Length: 150
Image (tube, rainbow, N blue to C red; front, side):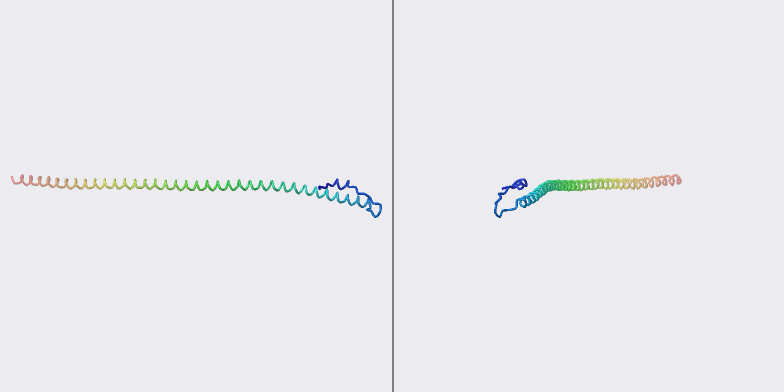
């Protein structure tokens, strides 16, 4: 059975004529008990409100913590994706540079081959020129010596 402070204040006792309780003492005690009970009920109500507030705050904190964890995980995923993309981009740049370097080397080797061919052609032409020139000189020399004998 629930008893309220009002129930305690309004409680009436039967008075016995012999050896009964002093009604003023009983009333004073009931007033004190009612006051204490009222105070305890108020304190209990305040504690329940405080507990409810703490529970709400705790739920809010748990939700914020969950959101923070999700944000951190998302940030980690983004960072990992950025690292992977940077690696891929770096690999692509390196492979393009290697291809470009190979093309440059191949062009230089081709140009070197062409220059060597030209040098060989010029040497061959020089030898032909020298031989032709010697032949011409000998021919002039024979003509001069033949003119001198006649």
